[in-house]
Amino acid sequence: MTSELDAGTTPTARSPQSVLSARSPWMRRLHSWLKKTPVNPYWLEMRHLDSAVRHLTGHASGVMLDVGVGERPYGSLFSPHVKRYFGLEYPPVVFGNLNPDLWDYIHVVHGIIDIFGDAHVLPVADASVDTILSLEVLEHVPDPDRCVAEMARALRPGGKLLITVPFVSPLHQLPYDFRRFTPAGLEELLSRYGLEIEELRSRGNVASAAGSMLAHYLLRHWAAKARKHDGSVIMSRWRGLLTMPFIAITQAFFFLAEKFARDDALCLGYSVVARKSAEPSS
Ligand SMILES: C[S@@+](CC[C@H](N)C(=O)[O-])C[C@H]1O[C@@H](n2cnc3c(N)ncnc32)[C@H](O)[C@@H]1O
Image 1 (cartoon, rainbow, N blue to C red):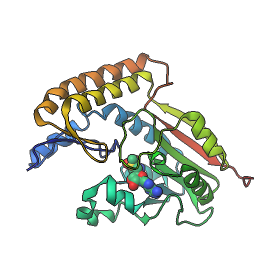
Image 2 (cartoon, rainbow, N blue to C red; image 1 turned 90 degrees about the vertical axis):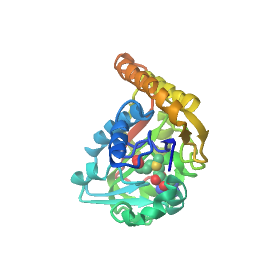
Image 3 (tube, rainbow, N blue to C red; image 1 turned 180 degrees about the vertical axis):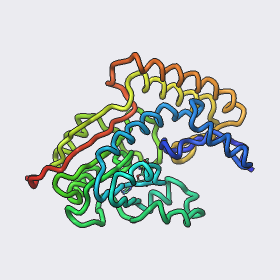
Image 4 (cartoon, helix red, strand yellow; image 1 turned 30 degrees about the vertical axis):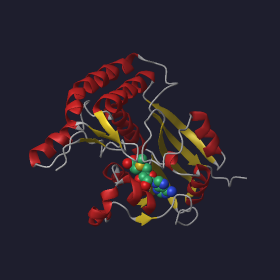
């Protein structure tokens, strides 16, 4: 029996970090409810990521390829906006690191992952896709230049690339966490492949980043008893429970503070809408 509180690796809105291991049905219900509250150290991050992704849905159309679909957390959000939604995953990462137990759940891959492939060599024809979505992926690829070049190749002229990347976020999915991007870095990277930025938005601001960092400090310094190979932590049961209220109060406070903060030189991440120019890039 697992007697630990687990804090996982990937701050996605639909599969947020586990705070309690849950076996019995009522524990499972409590567990999934708690994940949506400020006791979850990823709550501030999840809220901002979720609202950024909801905003991106308005830019999706036609045939959409989700590069690095993971566990397809936003499939139901995008599906009504597009003609076809294809989720692409890279087996060595998804099976080796993202979720080591995924082999046990191989039956669920059907309906989650449509194409196995590498973002560095997308297995799709030139100019065959209307929208490419890639959420919290570019920091995990060894060669983002090559991936963006591939995305630009796969997009039809006028097609849109929708991406999000973290900025203030703990290391995760180790050893596949290679970098963080700045707005200028994103702009420079995308423009090199004929992708013109239409919108670049910060997720949160200095207060959101401070609240998230404090929550991670409480999680990692006070509640955790060990760090796992992928960067996530195993929480001690009692210290975890004692720390939960502090994590909740901290995040609730900074959730209010961010309404009054203006500076986004420090934020939780960025979301970008870029359009492939109609003219071939030189
Ligand atoms: C932080 S997760 C995000 C997953 C999903 N987009 C989400 O928002 O929940 C990063 C994803 O990128 C995938 N990934 C890493 N390297 C990749 C590559 N070379 N090609 C395609 N996907 C890759 C990982 O397997 C992982 O699912």
